[in-house]
Image 1 (cartoon, helix red, strand yellow):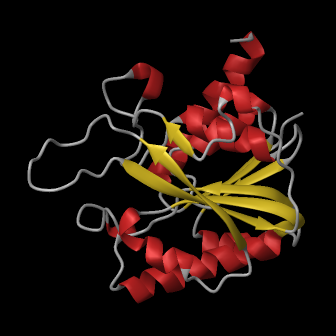
Image 2 (cartoon, rainbow, N blue to C red):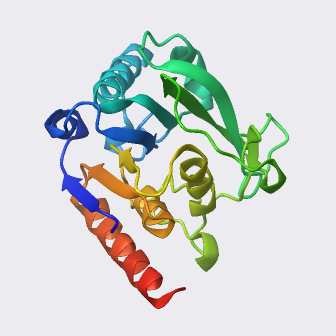
Length: 229
């Protein structure tokens, strides 16, 4: 039976409550300063403040990760230098690319932003089982960005990630029954993916609005599994 645990609050406090070395994989999309003018939760006073915040949650997650664990975190192109130079105990294994050429705003003045980096870190020698013919272990994933007018890839959150992509990351780095942590759950996409793949899930979210949305989406995924959809 899949265990789903959702916690409302600040992950920097909530993660302290988890047992050490209890998490198999962390898959998350944290704040990284690209929406600061629109959303206060993504606003940082400086690059240094962003790096300090990133290091804090990553080091907390390292303590909670099992001796052979993985971490996938999305990040912004603008701050890749800071991520590469972060003094974390996690070992950076690869930088993957999520390429999403849809919804790029046309311009002739500058190169367009059409990809997000995904930093893949490891602790020890984690599980990794990918099918090359299904393009599960390529370093570039071409998957459309979620949008409001597309039911099959709906945008629930300003920075929604496609469930197809999240499922790939989880499937490659976990086995059925493993536990996945998302400290920045948002609208719950990682939780939905875990439910569909029979992985245990712990999700944390500071926004009551998005927490309720995540609860609803994960419950609906539960119903879908029961119906065999």
